[in-house]
Image 1: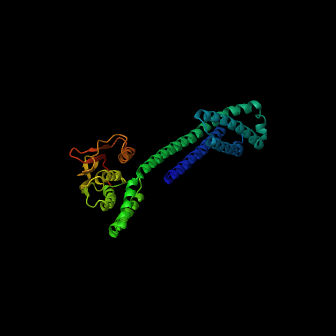
Image 2 (image 1 turned 120 degrees about the vertical axis):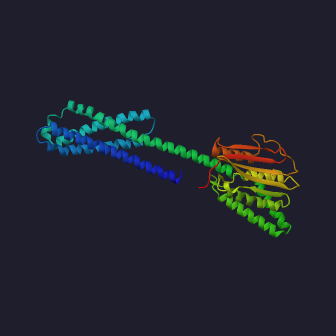
Image 3 (image 1 turned 90 degrees about the horizontal axis):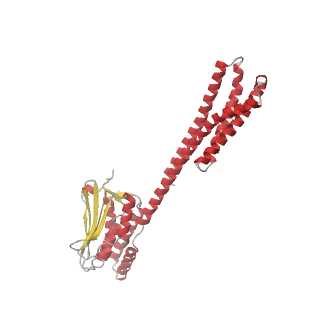
Length: 362
């Protein structure tokens, strides 16, 4: 669970405990005030002598209420089961409270209390206190249960967010092994041919690309300018492999440089274009990354033109790991609020395009 979620959970738990404690104290303060007022208004004789035992009995009530609160906090199961247990707790509280009430008043006022200490009076007191404790037990159960429901919902939401993040990370880290193999093979070939400078440049570009790519949070949206910068590092590597075949064109108006996009969302598309168009061609291929706005939407397009290699046909659903990867990331990030198309140009070449909500860097 994230640190922020843990802190929020701890704060909500403290708030729930504070509400429960305040409820208990206010409840018994009101009970003490009501009984004391009744005694002074309707009683007779030395009413002040009733205050010490009444305070002690109120203390017993507070202690029993906190015991019931702890009982509810440790009791699980269905709500029906817990309601039945709340009634049982109220009955136990009423029995113990009535017993303590008779014992304390008999200790302080044996003469006045002796005549009233009968079994029928005790049972009547249990019946009367049962309703008091039922209200208290039900109120405390409601506080505890609502706190548990909020905690459960929070954990469920966090688990969903964690699963969502894990899915995005899995998609994000599906780097094409062909890219690594081809790059390392090209470096080895350059070294074998004693072309030290291009080999060093390719190693530096590879290092920069991997460092930048792996340091980027897969759940983070980044400015489009940063996304294009990362793809430029990748394309600089491929330019060493295909110096006479790869022509890169970037169409990114200044107005969209700060638009936010999922990190490395265009990487599989650019990689596909290099692998399927540039690598299979003997003629120069123009790889274009274009961005444009249409109302509140940002459209990104990765296309290639000029290849004389084997033409790619229409996209078949379920094929193409790179295309499927991008489509799944977009669906996970935006749901149905995005469009994704891929297919060959009428005049040759291939294009992949998607439109997402336009959000700008603050």
